[in-house]
Amino acid sequence: MKVFKKRGEITRFQILAEIARGDPHLRQKDIADKLGITIQAVSENIKNLADDGLVETGRGHSRYKITKRGIEKVKKEALNLRKYADQVLDTMNTYKSVWPALAREDLQAGERVWLKMESGTLYAGKEKSPAHAEVLQDARKGEDVALSSLGGTIELEPGSVVIVKLPPINQGGSKKTDLEKVRDIYGRSEKDFDRVGIMGTVSRAVVDKVGIRPDFEFATPQAAVAASRRGLKVLVFAVGKMTRSISRKLDEEGIKYVIEDVSLL
Image (cartoon, rainbow, N blue to C red; front, side):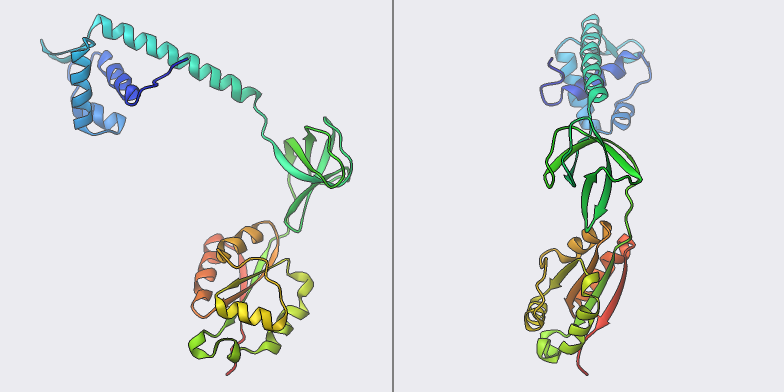
């Protein structure tokens, strides 16, 4: 089915449909305001419609009048549009949203499983939880499994971020960083940090010196937000003013964070 295949056909149809209403006081401005287009666009389309014999202009009390041919055109395109909309609705009625998860055990198609988020990854298994879904295809333990008909609530502990503020290079960089304090921050809560991010060259130097392997170093504010939303606890090393950019992003997203300044006085 061809529905408004050519560019601009939908606009022509809408303008023609407005004229078909038979309002004797209809102005180009009225059409433009209603359709959200310019008056010039309305004028050009009306001229083309008139040239095609679909509209008459400037006769009697009415500025614009749809012709018999124009009426047939509107009816035909309206019916095509209705058929197309019906097809879309039929597709949507049978459409199933599909979600991926990792299988905790062997799962079979049609089986009801329970969902749990751990370390930012969604798992599906037979141990009951507040969230459930239906398995679409067989999956072995450890494989990705396709799920549909999700229901309930996935339990998720709120994530948080610890920002380690480092001195910029013009203030000494890694040489003026309290590395023992960095080790203390990381070491006392190492198990609590699911991800580590860095921002800036000084951050790279510091984590290399203390033996910390970062998980991400590009688009760090966005990555920290994404991880926190999944309930992860994130440690971010930021240099000087970069601390403001990530803290501002976290504030916008409503994510809890603390800042640890490790500059040597």
